[in-house]
Image (tube, rainbow, N blue to C red):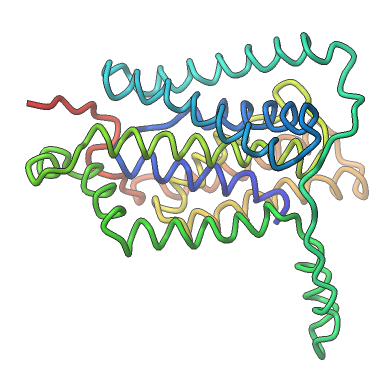
Length: 296
């Protein structure tokens, strides 16, 4: 669950963006931006709440840049996404070395864990439930809520219908009065905010520190989870659990089985490739994804 949480936040964000018709390769950069500005806001203010708000703000701003180039300037969305990733990598690396030249030595206000000690009292399965769910980080629970809320919004509300219609047939959506540009802007910015929450979990929820490029490709794995989950929140979350299992399994493989660190670090990415190869030709994206819309 801990390793799946940042992937799930980014994957749900990717679903919102791609359901509206905009490919968001920039999830990696938005996660990295959230990781840096989350810990910067936490150290600066002494409050993890401010850290989360800063992460969401700057992740949303970075997504807004991607949205502007992809929607208004009609740039290639893949190229724009990669440019956002490089921008985030360079910007966070520069700011980290400028603000914290000797590393982060201040006390970092971290997102707290939620202790559910009462689970231990449940007969037969209490120890198991307490061990798994008894001391999870607050952001893990927020991730659960995000997955459920994303499903409800996308498939049970008029807002979700508008997002899906814009991603499937933007011309028809425009004809009935739906603002294609407005919906796509909102969806892409939402994806940046959610991806930044995933990055903030890494820095102020899990590790309690920051390192350059600390996301290490997790944004791309989240994109794989979007495809693996067929652009549906529940299935994407299941894919994140699978990929998170790959990250978690790498630790005992290295410690107990004495497997090479380089080989172990490649295991989650190999698992991602294997999962995607099995889906070739069977995962159908929204019809208008990646196609800039020209209002007439």
